Image (cartoon, rainbow, N blue to C red; front, side, top):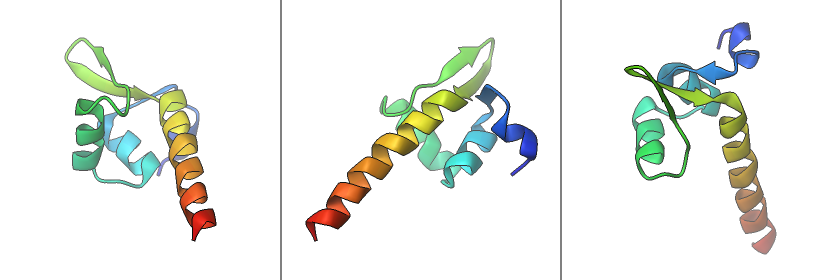
Amino acid sequence: MNESTFTKPCLTRIEAADYLSISVRLLDRLATEGRLPKVKIANKTVFRRIDLERYLEANLSVRTEIDRAR
């Protein structure tokens, strides 16, 4: 991952997938299902870094609760 990825407010599909450590295909599915917000700028789809961070926080919280229940 490029260092500038951490400072850019919007990431491409490839950068966003890399940031989340998931495939582009899964990223697209999450966006299509409405579980991850995307932004269309002209004919380009980008993801706001803040939305990716919120997604990570929400899903880390869920995972932590599952681990505690075991």
